[in-house]
Image (tube, rainbow over all chains, first blue to last red; front, side, top):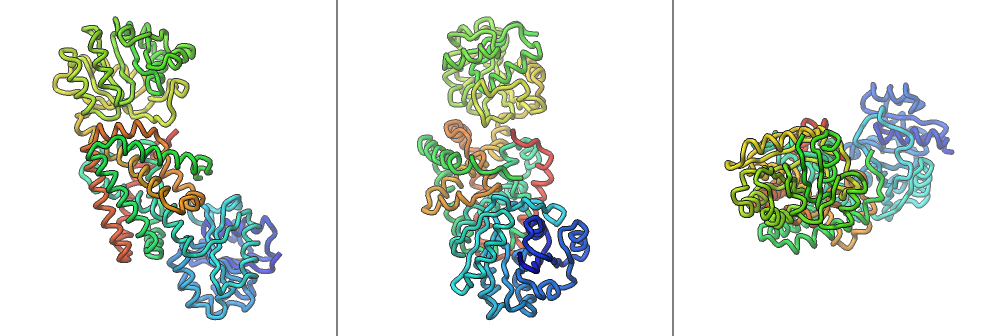
Length: 291
Length: 291
């Protein structure tokens, strides 16, 4: 058990982590800080936090573990703020869904304390938001990716890993570049493709009719186009190289399929669709449904 | 109540229609025919059909209503076969998810009987298949699109419409060209885009890692890539012009988004994502979830 856990940003992820770690008796005290005083107070009222701090510096003072669970675009300012008052022995980690750009932000801000920062990314759904939506089981049997760099202290990695295990998660390590490539493919690109289809259709004259006939397949395909636009804007700018690469490959593959359709090449289309179905059935049928 | 209903093709759609119409006391006798004797026998054993016919000509003899519920690519041969023995007063309809090419098949095969054929498309999920998966409520509160042409008899349209209403569906009429454009956009294109993404990823070296980290968003986005490849091959070739148009527009819109990401144009990306989220929330949140 650690003495003091500080969680900066008490939305779905931060709030759920606080609840999971309270259940696990991970810390004697859980202190939180968030930009919106009323949200923070609600997290205290709901029993998610022991204390709501009035400032970042109050939250991180004497903390053994500091978790940054704010939007990716807010990380940079937060690292600069934290650097002013972070205790020498505190371990820091974050929950951002891109890693290389956040590592750069941390490196620039933290100075000699950078070795105590462990980049992290819990793979857990985030369609709902806010402390009210949080729950202790969010991370149970979900994976958390840690992407330590050369300077990262092994002791710090072990401590962050132990925290996530206490929250019920499975911890895997990966280098940050691979992380950003993998998630550009399995998460970032699909979100952009879904946004792109809905936007492409809604700008057409006949979109009312089209949407009125859209059924279950379209509904599921476009579910992720209901995600937070600001969050995805920031992921696009934060992971632009990897995302651009995946999308350019996709566009080139789509070009080929469009040509096959225009030429009526039934045999080749069948081969592509069969290969895709086989892969999807092989890799995805055992995945948990989305909540 | 009609005397004899003939259903050619007793899979999910044909089997479910038979069950819904039996419940509604729509016909004195429901006879079915399918290519696979064992499947047909199972539909009889399950009480879905009164009689399993040994041939198309036996099924359609004396029928008042004939429903063609076979894959779109099998319609052409079936119309030719039916034309040999269709009773003069029988009404025909089909359930194919593309309409213009099936209308051409019917027109070429049916001769003077073409006026008794009403092109139809029930908008009902078809991820599972076979008579075993069929159930009487498949069409309840779902829409059925009828796309009569100039030659189509109004009496025939009314009879087909009454049949679908008896099955619990809501009937709408549309011209066949509009139908094929609308469904290219809301159904055909999303299927192809999902197949394309899975195939694009699975051909990469790191696909095992990518799929292992794929979560709920990817799972829902790619669900339709688990659909029947042969059926979608045939839809692509049967509705190639409309599908190609939608996909080319999409590719051009995607190109623009890729450029915005590469240039880091956060403001414009946010605007696109916001517009898409608004449309998706507006049009899709009240839709029934897929079964």
